[in-house]
Image (tube, rainbow over the protein chains, first blue to last red):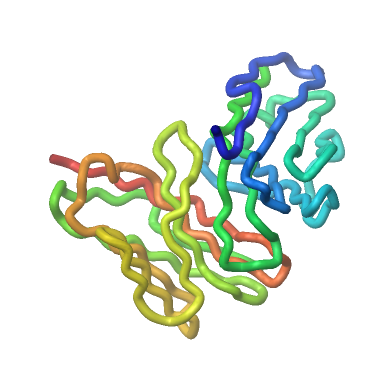
Length: 115
Length: 109
């Protein structure tokens, strides 16, 4: 009965590889997010989808491509991985992006290490 | 530009009270969140303020002054389990949260 789940929890891979991280929420929320948290602990928004539609697309390399097959899933695909991509990636969801009062529910995170 | 400032680290004693400050600068403002993040875990929601004043929730309270661009999180009767990072995040006019780097709170016995 996990609210927001991500797989895998840990991902170790070599530079140049392509990898995907999956996220699913069973809360019935309309909006999902991808965040990157680097070693300095800054949480940086990468993407946001509302009902499968992209609403936030921050300045991230186009090697990162989100995909939302339905409103309960938001996957992140990363091409040609680089050392600087090493970080913890959090998926989150909230009932509605344009309702300011709604909190976000975070998944457990995926720790990506690129060697 | 948009900016959130909070202290990097604070230390307090078990049973005491601690106040974690946050100042923000955003284009548009629609409220301020506080989240708690234990090491190696996901952030979890603590509080939301949109109007000036103090919101109390058990041992935790959060204060907001919109005119000063300032908020604080007050933790009372500190317990060892309160050792965590506390993240301040302000909403902007673009439907997103601007996050601070977090304040690492260390509780000593």
